[in-house]
Amino acid sequence: QVIVWINSHPDKDERIQLGVNFLYQYVEFCRIDHPEIIRNTRILKNPKVKRAVPLKNTTLTKLHRNSFAGYFSIARAYLSQVGGIRLHDDDLISIRLPITLKRGAYDDEEAEPLTATQARKVLGHLEAPKTIAACEVMNDTAFRVTETGLTQEKHIHFETEPCSIDLPAKNAKGGKAGGTRYIRDTTALHVKALMTGDPEHYVFRTNDKQTRIAFRVNILDQLRDAYDKEGMTEIYEDSKHHKYNTHSWRARAGTEYKRANGEDLSHGYLRHTKHLAQYMKYTKEERIEAFKKAEIDLAIDEIDKKNLEIEKVNKENTKLKESEALVKELEKEREEWKKQQAEVTKEQVIELVKKQYDELNQKKSSSK
Image (tube, rainbow, N blue to C red; front, side, top):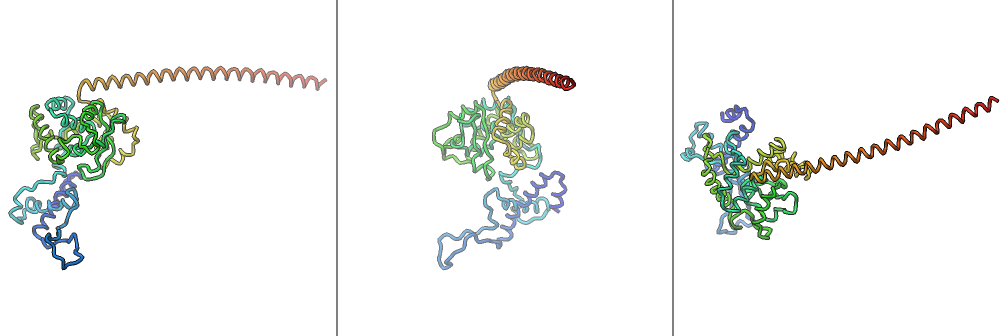
């Protein structure tokens, strides 16, 4: 019945989410109801040896918290909460979904993207330079907050144009890095002020001993205070999640990038699985050009926007002048070719007339 209920949903992504949720708690169900399903992860070469610490026995061990096996335990909650089957008293406890799962299965539960005005006001309430720089990096690169916390000095390249940041290999999704992203000159200045010269230094953390979770909580607390001051406290009725959170900066990057480059490139820049491979096929120059198109929209400060617009107009004027000069040069070359062709044609006509005149004289002499 649960499977039939899942298949009754028309949206494919929603069905996948519900299926994953269902499977997640199946593992917990097996652990509690069937503890005999145990797999030895290590085998003793000498079983007579006594150990102070017992061997690690696990039930359906998962590689890490993002492993698909971890999603099986959700089946347990469905049996009790959806199917109406009472297994244990602990089934009445609401089991929190893993933080790596998409929160909710509805499009309107995505984080609300910030506008330039909202982003500017929020940054005005922040005091820590590292937090301000981290938000600007998330705004430009579409990094998640955990990925921003993983960024070290070795990942940042000020020598490139524009300044680039490599996605840390151990990103928040537990997968491979998704290439290089770029930041605006204003963001680069704020980031450069945080550099210490140590390649292994975590640029945006309070200190190198701060954990990823502590960094994420710290950033969220500061942003939550700023959001509250601006009255940005809306929540979704279904999930009770805040519309504005750390993900809002990444959502802003995707929105502005889409405005300048279209939906497909926007999904690729956000590293969505279905579009990342297509985005990676673009050359480095094409990716930089796409970022340049979105740079004005990504700018938060109005002065930065005006400076970028002036720079864009100046470049267009320079290209226009170069084009006009090229047109004049081509026209000059065309006239020269016309002149040469006319001279050649004139010589050919004279030569042809002479030839015809000689042939006529030969005929007259032969007739005599």
